[in-house]
Each structure stands twice: as C-alpha cells, then as structure tokens.
Length: 176
Image (cartoon, rainbow, N blue to C red; front, side, top):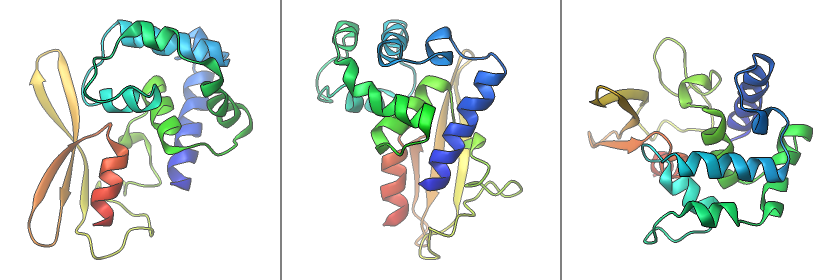
C-alpha cells in the first residue's frame, strides 16, 4: 500500500506539472475537491467506480447515487485528502481510491507494483501462495467505452475478472 500511495502522489504531481488537471485539482481545497466530485458525478459514472464513490460519500450500495448528496456532503471529509496531497500525510484506502478516480490514476501507472515486462506484481508483500496476477487487461464493451478489468488467477486454476477500480476487492482476493 505504501508504494500505491507514493505512485498516486507522483502521478498527481506529474499531471499537475503538465497542466492536465482541472483547476479544482490543481489548487485543491476541501470545497474544490467536493465540487470536482459533484461535477464528475453529475456527468455520470462509468465502469465499476460507483462503489468507490458510494463508499466515500457514505451512500449505501442499494441506494441510487444522487449528485445533490455529493454537493451537500461535509467538506471536512476532504481534509485528509488535502493533507495527503500537500503534506504527504497518510490517509485511508477509501480516500486514496477517490483521489485515484479524480485524477485518472490507473494500475498501469503504478510502475513499482507492476513488473514492466510481464505485467505481473513484483511487490514482495504478495506471497507465492497466489498465482501471478495479470494486470490490467482492457475489455472493449462498445466503441466509445472501455472498462478496465483485472484477471486474478489462483493456483487451483480459478480465474476471476474484477473491475479495475475496485482496489479493496482486488487486495482481498489476492490475500486469499
């Protein structure tokens, strides 16, 4: 997780330096991060990132995601993200997932976790008990929409496709 945090922060700094982020993300405040989430939610959520957003905004999975709930969300909940971005102070996994979603970070950008030639985990925090994880594979669902999927393959031969935005589920599956 330490490498993942560093990779997200590095990706954020690179995109910020390149001028590729919105003004809300370039000069973040808690209110600007909330506003950026509101804009993105209002424009629609693609792929499996709905779980990340509902988790952060404390919306039960069985309820619909309403942009008004995002707009009225307590801005103080974004302070840990600001502390992470500006001071490098650690934050929770759900905060990291939300930030990764906001800045467009994906697993291919995490060079320390993915071996460049094989596309498999090279991080020593994973044991040999789990078969190699092939990361990520793009599946085309339509000409305009790409959903990132991760294939988790166990020694028993069981293969499982998981949405690329669902990092906590992927983490749990790898530990099995």
